[in-house]
Structures are given as structure tokens and as C-alpha cells.
Length: 114
Length: 111
Image (cartoon, rainbow over all chains, first blue to last red; front, top):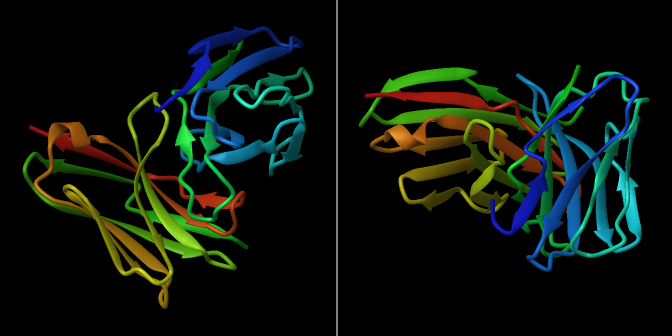
């Protein structure tokens, strides 16, 4: 899992509530990413950020929001607008902007909507 | 449509045996091909990465091959160990921020 931490490991949410997932890295990486993983599917990109105070929507950004106020932190908020938020959420970071730079993943947060 | 398909979906082998996992990709433009190992409930860990000019890359008992002409890759695991039980994910890279994930092959090693 490298120097990437995610918290909490498990999160339970009632319908209609917003929740924020934490992602912190001490690798001094420029780029950070949020993915969603559902059973039997590949990881899907929610948001990514290549530099502080800038972020871009991924393939499934609806119902999610992010911020990148510090280089080491990239929190993800799952809003009540996300219709099916139960999933495994993975944060990743990458050192630079090269095409072959490896992404390093955190341990993940499993979100369950009750 | 950019996509990555992996086969088989799941595989069970005995400890000590070899196995090969397959990956077919359709992405454009193609930049690189990666294999990740993901233990249950954990984040993926990179095993290998190959650019279109590389045919093979090894990491211990893991050997990945790439055929850019047929758009196929394989991951060969030699002398499997119980700790190899995991999902193996093939990922095709398009750009620095655009990569396409396969759904993975779930490998179980039996003693």
C-alpha cells in the first residue's frame, strides 16, 4: 500500500447522508485518483487531480465531489445524489506525469449504505 | 470502445503448479500494459509494466508477455504459492491519466 492511507476502512451510511472518505499520501506524489470497484467489474475512475487546487472529473463523477487543498490530501465526498454508493473505494497516487508512471494504491474504504 | 477483457474469470490450481492468465485489450492509442495483484479487501499492487516495444517483463515468479500486434498479454506464474491467491488485474494505459482496467482473474491456490 506504500505511503497512502485511507480512512476509515469500513463506513456505513444511511440513505440521504453525505460522507467523506479520507486519502492521505506522504510520497510527495503530484497526481492523485479516486476509483470505485464493484464486484465483477474493473475499477472505474471517479475524479483525479494532477496538481494542488485542480481536479478533473473521471468517468463516473456524478454524485461525488473532491477537493485538493494540499498536495498530500485528496478527500472524496459521496453525496446523497449518488444513487448506488455501496462499493469499495480506492485512492491512488502517481509520482509525475509520465505515461508509464506506476499508480500506488491505498488499502481502500468499503462503504455500505444501510 | 476502449476495453480490457481477462480470462478466465476464476481459476483454481494446486500449490506448486504453474498457470497463465490472459488479457485482450482494445484501446487507442495504446501506451502501456500493466498487471496488478489485488489481495481480498486490499488495494492493487503493481507487478509489471510494459510499453508497446517490450515483449516480456519478469518480477520474481511472475512473467508478463505482450504482443502489441494481436493486442494480447499474458501473466505466467511459476511454482505457485498459497500467497499467490488473489485477483490479478490487467490494465491498458492510454495516457498519463487515462487507463482502462480489466475486471480481473480470481486465482485460488489449493494446498
